[in-house]
Amino acid sequence: MSDLKLYLVTVVFLMNVFVAVESDCILSLKENFGSPQPVLIQDGGLLAPKDGSVFVVRSETLLVACVGDGRYLVLGNETQDIAVAQAECVSGDLFRVEAWEGRFKDIKCNHPPWVSVDRTGTPCYGGNEIVR
Image (cartoon, rainbow, N blue to C red; front, top):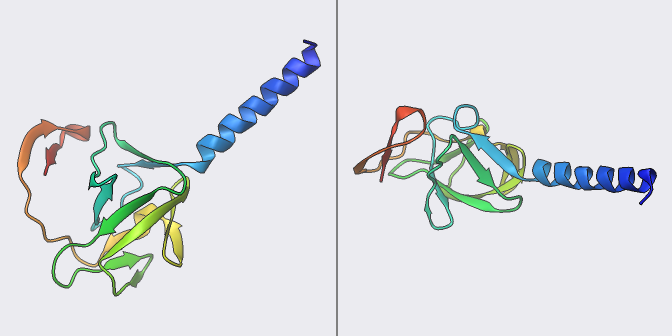
């Protein structure tokens, strides 16, 4: 294979890799989560990242829920009249909830969710403890 063909194949391959990575959503626990944070469900279970980041494939959805009486989703600065919605990965840290599109950290609850939890004794990122 000539050097030019090899170069072009390499460039096309790298462009595809960068486009694929850019298309998915990668969320850092330190930077991309707002407060008060909704309960997050991925693939039917509570979202439980292991390394400080959450990976969501483009177009995949997370169920976001503000649990308890009088708890509602806040999208950007607007309180919604819903407590549960699907948040779809657009790209990077951008998500779509119904007609709203914005940064994942701007998906919050109007008050902390009202839940009961069990301590697991299992450590997770940053020395915190996983609860169920």
